[in-house]
Image 1 (cartoon, helix red, strand yellow):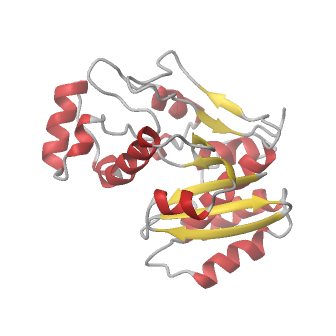
Image 2 (tube, helix red, strand yellow):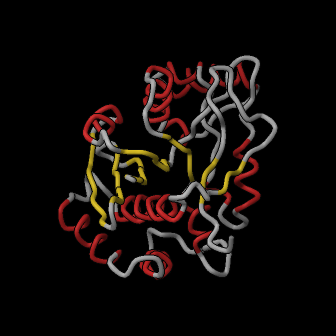
Image 3 (cartoon, rainbow, N blue to C red):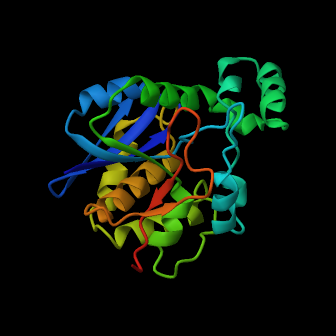
Length: 239
């Protein structure tokens, strides 16, 4: 069973996958190429919002995620509504989001809006043969942590990276060599160190959930107006 963790990066997308006891990785400019190049993929955990607000529907799951991450809630932000994704200009997108949702959007959310739209279009236009779950690396790290505590360090710091690597190594002793392999074979202008940690974390959470024993965060607004389910996948090692 081929299971993957996918994180956005400057180049496009970093995918770490697990198959028959082995890890591999790939860097792709777009999600269509990723899917085409991995026809045996069965399930992916991806760090991107899936299921969006639009006129007549509000995505509210982000507030649920924030409550799960005290001290790190700033890593969660509300994605633009589907209508606002059509604009390449921040002020226009913000204005449209206010019209639809009654509130603006952060620049952090706007900066990844092209990736959000890319995945949204991909899900709407394809009859997928593999499952795609929205996930969140910091939520996954929390529940991979045997103490089930939020990691308050930032993974962009040496301390934060070491703390996260220590957790990941508990589930596979070869993770450090995988991290180093990706680090050595990619440019930092394309893939940052924390992108690698996030993709590996998502892949491990997915692998540990191989027999469909993943956990899901949901709330009452669980299906958007395009029929896309809103649910956040992670693996709870205490279960």
